[in-house]
Image (cartoon, rainbow, N blue to C red; front, side):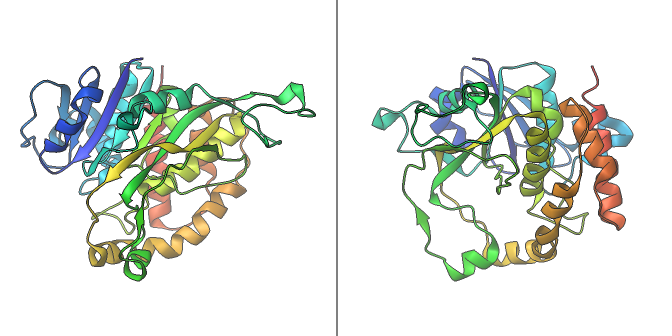
Length: 319
C-alpha cells in the first residue's frame, strides 16, 4: 500500500516523531501556511514541502482557489498527491497523535485501518443486522458500493464547534467507535483532522475557500464533505466513519473559534439543503463536481466565487 499523507501547518513538525513508525515508509506532503517555507523539516521522512510561493508558482492566476491563513491550504497537497497516483491519500492535523487504542492494544495501525476501510464494500437501500449478510438480504445489491472515503474520529479533545465548546468545556472522548457506512442520501460532519480517501475521488475533495479573505471560516472540511457525499451518492460510492481514532491533544481557542464560525453557523443550516436539491446527471467524479459548481442554487458574491473556485479545481484533474 502506497500512501501519501498531507499535513497543513504553521508550526514545527515535532508531532511527527510519534508517527515515525507509521509514516516513515510513506511520502508526506507539508502545506505550510506561510508566504515562504520557514519550518524546519524533521530527518528520516520523505517530505515534499510547499508554501504560498510554490502554490502561486504552480497554479498561477488560479492560485487564489487555495486559501491562505486557513487549514484548507491542504487542498493543494491533495492535488500534488493525486499527481503521483498513490493507493491512498490521507490527511491529519498537527495536533493529532497515535491513539492508545491503536497498535498497543493489538489493533491495526492508523494507515492500515484507513486502508482496510477503503477496501470495504457497502450496500445502499438495505441495512445489515450483523457483520455478515443474514437470511433474506437481497443478493443483487450486496457489496455494490465501494468505500472511497474513510473518516476517522478521535480520542481526548473532541472536534467541537465553539458554542458546544463553551457549554461543554470538559467534554472528552474515550471509546472505540467502530466503523459504520454513512447511508445514501444522508450527510455527516466530515472533519479534516483524520481522513483518508481514494485518489479517484480527489476531484471532489476540495476544501473550500475560507478564512481571513472570505466571509466564512471553519466550515471548509464540513462543506467539502457535503459536496463530496452528494457526488458519491450519485455515483454509487460509499463513505464510512469511525476508526481509526487519533488522540487530539490541543483544543483551539474557543473565543477565536466563535468569531470565525459566526457567519458560517447560519449558512450551515441551508448550505446542505441547497446541495441536496441539485440533480446530478454526470457519470464521473470530476464531471459531477463540475456540475455541482454550475448548479449550486445559492446567490451572492461568495457563492459566485465558490462556484468559480470549484470549477477551476476540477480543471486541475484533467487527464
